[in-house]
Image 1 (cartoon, rainbow, N blue to C red):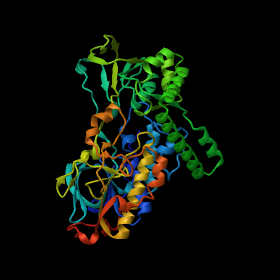
Image 2: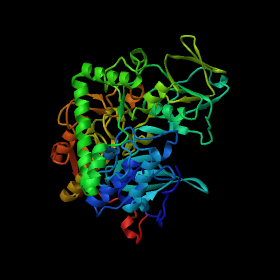
Image 3: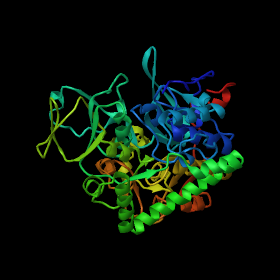
Image 4: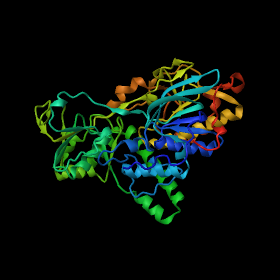
Length: 516
């Protein structure tokens, strides 16, 4: 990947007040900006991006083979057709797509790069957010504040600055190189070397076949097997549609087909777990030709979709295992030793390079503790309304994607809902709105997968309730049918504009002739 996509137009950093501030210029943030400027064209907005370029996750991750684990017809934007040939695209292609979108719709001019939000306080007297922004440039680090009427966080839910490290014993004794996928060393050459990849999640199953080609040998070391599904690298239906139909119609048909298939597959797996287990293990046996190997290393103890299912294009991981270039070992790490890793079974795996694909460290609201009138709001005590807004915090939305489908499907619905709420506020002259349940809610974890990285951080996140609109349904079809038709009066408590005073000392972005 390269660093193209940085701001190209003039900037007006002296603008200090906006109707909306979006935090994050990744896949979600760029999509949110498009929705805001097309569905609320009179709103002024800015995007705060802590990094120096567009792309978010797809700019951060540089490990071998990085790619999507959702098909690009649903991971891509609804409003910008995906023209790539691969259904599961590589990271650089996705990054180019995001940057093209930002340039095509003039969004890149709205981004303030190297600008990290480190504080956010909502003043109920003026219905205004005051954001503390840390800016990095050639002169060093400085801080300033900007204000806005509505804050929309599109930072995702994991920590960009720290990955999860289990704290393996003896790491300092290892004579080779240790790399974490989130911070891949650009000069790491594993050609002809012995590699161990610790983990079997989405990152590991991507890295292993990619590293296996030039490496002498790769071992995928896992504590517990993961459900893995082989998907076609190309979508035959998409190819057929794009040869015969206008591009936007083709994109819409393929997207609809993939959404329907994904939703039906998930529902079938959850309702018929035994049949789902037989289906995936049967496919693995056909791909690997070894029933014992599948039973030992590719049959998890949990049901399908208790944790996210990993997708591999055209069975590349299975092919690498069958070829002998990759070995899968199911065991626990005792400690690192100079020559590699000693397992609890006593076996020593020798290696020159060890990749710790041990997962993400989750982080709510970009690591910022939001305050209202200077008092910190405990996020774990709040509930999520329609997967977007939080109780206890006015004029705030969070972008949280699906766990069983493409992130962008839920992200785009949330952005459209935010725009609908903003229009509703303008129509009724409301200065602020905050979700408020009409009864006490039974709390449930927001992210309901049993994956270790989710369980470790579940207590740091807001909660969800037992049913809509306080429950995040993992069903795009239902959400798409109801989100834009819901009665906002039944979930949101408004504050009339007449009940607040105008904030003092703010400078509107409208006062400037150019855009930031």
